Length: 169
Image (cartoon, rainbow, N blue to C red; front, side):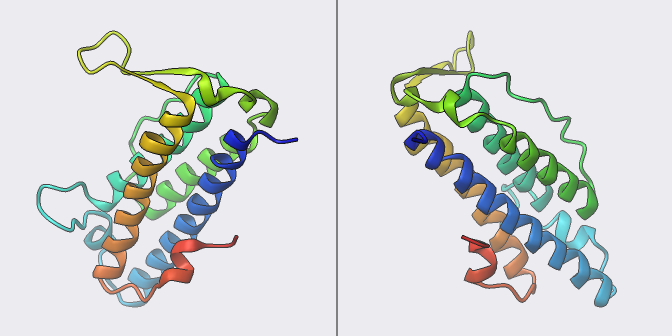
């Protein structure tokens, strides 16, 4: 039987990352069809003190990799954060999904009570049990950045809706 920690993380992360890939593909086609500079969307922000679309996608991918890796007890794969185009973001999301696909579901067994240490050795160090890490920190952070990326594109005229946001489930 598959661990609930796996079932409540990896498939959810993959669903939303796949939906985000599809939305970004639509955005890429939209800027080409309308002769819009891609940076008008890639660097769009909802408010000046918020991250731009590119960074929102990068952070969503970072959280997806971090959640999967920490729960599975493997090294979190690094990312340079050098993405600048829709193609770069697509490659980042594809790599992240491939990483998640490679995680062994058996490694998630019993991780509800596994100690997860965030920012070890720093003044911001935080220790959470696996269940709290997933449900109260990791997934809310991940969904915040995916939702913000969706909202940025919708706000800037991309004709997408809830079905696009949810993807295939």
